[in-house]
Amino acid sequence: MSRWPFTVLTCLLALAGAALVADRFLIAPQTLPSPRWTAQTHAVGLSVAGQVLQVPANYIANAAQREGGARKRLDLAARLPGLAGFDETHAPLFRNETDLVRIWLEETPTSEQAATDTGQDSLRDKEDFRAGIYPVAGGLFARAFTASSPYASEEIVYDATGLRGKRTTPYAARCQKWNVSQATCLRRTPLGAGLTMTYRFPRDRLADWDRLDSSVSQLVQGFMKPRATAAR
Image 1 (cartoon, helix red, strand yellow):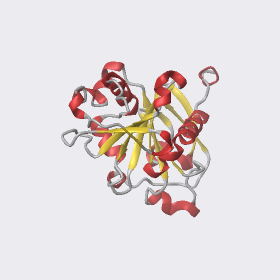
Image 2 (spheres, rainbow, N blue to C red; image 1 turned 90 degrees about the horizontal axis):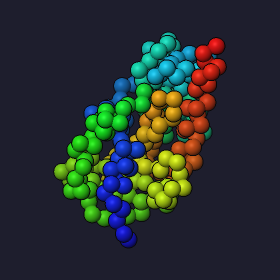
Image 3 (cartoon, rainbow, N blue to C red; image 1 turned 30 degrees about the vertical axis):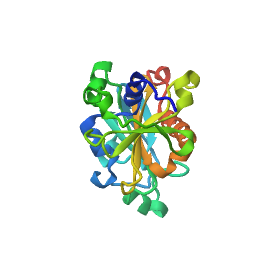
Image 4 (spheres, helix red, strand yellow; image 1 turned 120 degrees about the vertical axis):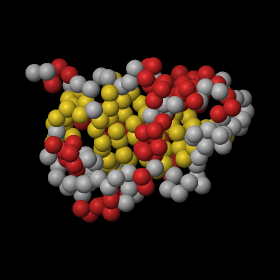
């Protein structure tokens, strides 16, 4: 199997990454503070990076954010498989971070800042990656980081067909390896309107990556109010 050029892998990292320090917080469920969930479904008016959103309260994973208003970042959660918000019947799934998709919305960083935030400065050398490329679930391929990399317990997974131009934004994510307890994957993608979405999901859902990616994007876009409407 031929290896992808390193410049392509650098592009994948830019698509898949989040801030190096913040990423350590985001990708490990056991380090997250316990959100105060609510079963209320009234719409909460918020804005992130000037984008107005109307989000049902039971999707918002931060009690303070349910007060509404302008925010630098918005923390959301939805349960699998249907991406529903919190309800009392499924409370243990939310409180134990089981079978959840956690979603973070924030302002799209500048390209220079993104390179720093995603840890690109520490990942420019081919030695950061192991040599082999191998297939994983859902028709994706993966390449692991070396033991000396800050991402040593993770690997980049990506859709090779997307890299050949069939997708506007090629699919790529950073995943913890299977030997990590409750392994998760982290994907970052632009939503437009100056907004970026990062979401984390259980690795055992990777086989359904295409449908999950579309569903998460559609969920969030459904919360976004058109700019022209919001200005009235």
